[in-house]
Every structure is written in structure tokens, then in C-alpha cells.
Image (tube, rainbow, N blue to C red; front, side, top):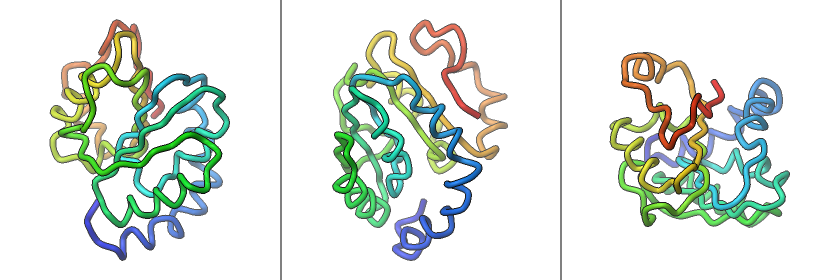
Length: 164
């Protein structure tokens, strides 16, 4: 995303219909059965926050580099019944210690990250042993995913923990 307040201001209204229709089942699947400490990578305006509310035992850190998107995410987090903290940060240099999270979710974030390999290294670093990386993304990352050496298993997971 860009550091443009217009983009942040238009994002939720433009995405309202797709969020209520096409994206809902994918977002539900993305968080299904998560528990523990979860990182929402590239949280944007907080579109995943309502889905975290359905989980009993999660503590969510939401990292977002764009100030405008992050401001909206903070407002969403304050209105949410889930335990969500929003912080400034970049997927290519996450502000967390090694092995901090049980799961990392990324919803439409990978297509906005310039250095995918660096971001995946960071995801691997902040995941605990046995942790899961789940992502939902546009086709913009398909070529990268097909050409890259498989990122699975990150931690012994036999198949992608991804929703596409």
C-alpha cells in the first residue's frame, strides 16, 4: 500500500461488498481453529479483526506499515471484543523476538510486500516451532509462489496452511 490518506480512506468503502460476499468464507477459513499468540501481518484497516472475535483464546498483534491504514486499524481494534494490539512495522523487518507467535496470518498483504523472500524469512523467524503461516492473497503472488522453492514445510507442516 502507499502512504496516502486517500487510499486508506477509500479502502473500506470500496471493499465493503466483496468483504460481505466473496471474502467472508475465505477469511473465516483463514482463522479457523487458531489459538494462542497470532500475528496479523499487514493488517491494513483491520479487516481480519471481526474474525478474531469468534476465537476463544487468541491474543493478536497486528502489524501495519501505512500510517493511514494503521490509524483505522487502531480504531477497529478499540471497537473489537478480541484482544488486538496494533503496531507500526514492516513485514520485511518485524519488530518481534524469535519464536513469538503460534500463527501468522496475512490477508492480501503478500502482494504489497516488495521483498517476499525477506518477509517469509521474518515470518519463519517469529513463528514458534510447529507454528502456522496462513495467507489469503490475490493472484499477483501466484507466479512468485509457483517459481519459489516451496515455503512448506516452514516448521514440519506437511501441506500449505494457506487459503487461496
